[in-house]
Length: 67
Image (cartoon, rainbow, N blue to C red):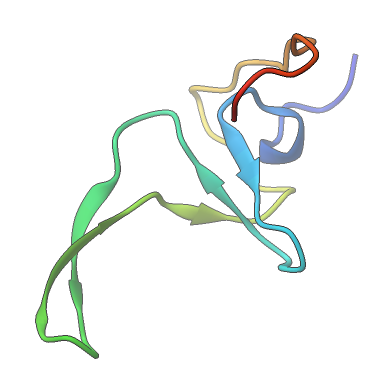
């Protein structure tokens, strides 16, 4: 069995060309944007080798499924 980390979790969305991804286990979290000086919502950014207690192994996806 593989390690329980973000890279192999059902809820992790790989950000192409970035060394990180988004955890999509729950709805985006509100946070303050320093650039725009207002609240924005975003998924938590994690690295492939991060982990948490909500891990769920990736399932095989149906061909042509919408991300």
